[in-house]
Length: 225
Image 1 (tube, rainbow, N blue to C red):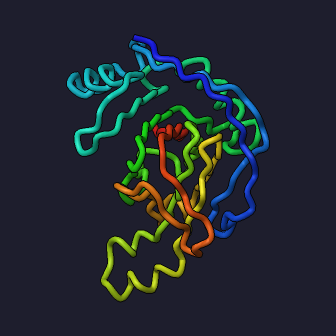
Image 2 (cartoon, rainbow, N blue to C red):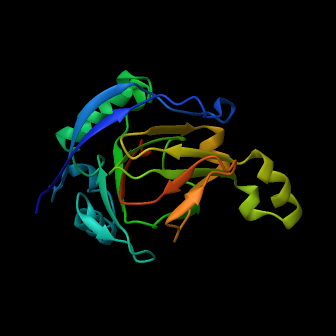
Image 3 (cartoon, helix red, strand yellow):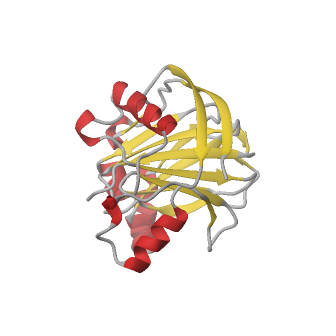
């Protein structure tokens, strides 16, 4: 089964990002995205995996899968299992061209998340399986508040949690093609999240009211071998 999503994407530079947290927006570019979600073949790159893990990877690669712990759907494209679809390769080329990733560490892993109105994701890190850099493009038209909070706020005592709130960061992502890149300290020592079960929310300064609607995100990473 093949599903096509054709969306015009405009990536615009925003100045509200905290550069000291290694968080930035890359761009000013306009592209047409055709996300192809399809059943993909198997190549020798996964032959070293245990059979059960290999079979599970093959089963889910390039297909919509509903998460067990949430209602939303995801589609995973792992370039270590098989070659990424040409349209994702084109997007990766663009990310490299604008400096989001070095040419020697091109993304080889793309995760597509579908969010219905009000759906979000709990605070988490992407973990040690990937290089410490992530780029995410927002599509679908809906804005959302992307939050970065220190890991100690989720893992430490109430006193430390209160102290860490001052170094939290929020970013308004626009659903017409915002590109957010975070790496190094922001990747390793901060959790990122989107509020769950919220249909509208206000930025912490009270200046912007965000109406939450349908959104699709494309997250690009480089998976370690």
